[in-house]
Image (cartoon, rainbow, N blue to C red; front, side, top):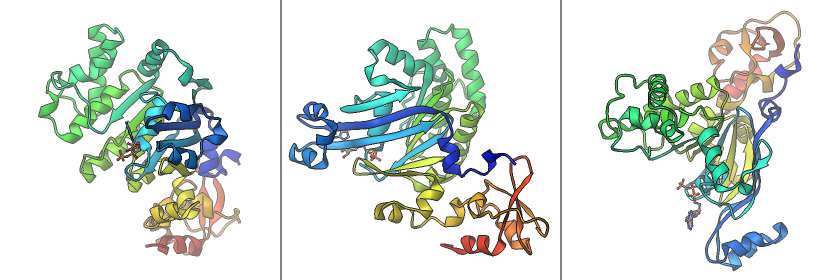
Length: 352
Ligand SMILES: Nc1ncnc2c1ncn2[C@@H]1O[C@H](COP(=O)(O)OP(=O)(O)OP(=O)(O)O)[C@@H](O)[C@H]1O
């Protein structure tokens, strides 16, 4: 039995190599923000901020994101999500802190290496599509490669590949105004991936779209993330969306990150009342995984097999038809434990 199959989702995330690290990141707006950034870290307090009449859009954000992780930043409007995301790419200059990619602090980079880093290693998708209105779909998707100096024919061939990948084949000659919102965002997604970025930043990419199209595009993002093991930072104010796509979620309140955890950790162990209220409507069965309820492998007598990383909701049909304990299996189909049916049914019923 391999140890990898026994570790919890959160530990699995921690086991990844660190791809991106934020350390004590602040973004402060207002007259005197620069001076606030020069204060020793211990003096950068909420009180100091208030007395200087500054807006602490991001306050002391510290976290690590693993390679290939989908890290969601979530919170209410005005909590600082977009500002934090922009600090990570230096589209906004942080007031203080460090932002490390593979260990190197990008806040110390000059303009040219920073632009190179963005062009070659980062892809970005924003809420309002930000497409070029006078360029066709093909022209928009090929644009980042043209900027990099890729020969036109090569850029267009790559763009066509991505246009097909996001389901827009046949529409490459259209202009953005001739597309629906969902199609425009598919163009934005394709364009952000032309340079095959390792880091993919998405800022409320689907909030202008209707729920069915959103669900489609969420699945699309996960598919495109997995095919190239991209590290994803995704901003949303929608908890459902966060739960659907995240390995881990950082919850922001008033500029501060109040908890970082897997969806299961946030729902079953909220760190503050704010988080508790946020997740109160989420049914535990949607986030609790079989591995969390699994007991030791007790030998025979099992009536069905379920995957260790499935959620309790996902195995509801097996729970209903089983007559006793269920075998828990790893991705290779080997039994690694057993699941007490009553215990799992109790989770299924909780919050339903
Ligand atoms: N340029 C600016 N000058 C002054 N205050 C700003 C500026 N940009 C953002 N803020 C403030 O910083 C705080 C965080 O804003 P931010 O846009 O990051 O929040 P958000 O969580 O992304 O919100 P939303 O979901 O509405 O986009 C807000 O109080 C906002 O008013």
